[in-house]
Length: 111
Image (cartoon, rainbow, N blue to C red; front, top):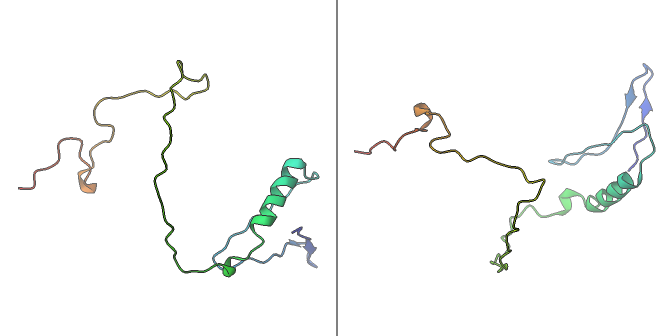
């Protein structure tokens, strides 16, 4: 939906649009005409948001789940050039915060 700004007598500019309860909204402003990527995004969002939230049931429905087997993937001989490299560290990474129940040593004995 294209927003049409309205000027108030004191010169302020107002944008008005509907916002559903428990919903959220966003708008895009640009001084340039939208390019093909923006047009595609707006078209996709228009379809995705065509049904108002209150048209959906508030009742929780559990969907069935199942494990789907996936074939193993062979590791490449060398890491990709753009891969983020990490370092390994030994020992505790977190400092001790006894008041929060976080200890850097063995767990306290329970008696």
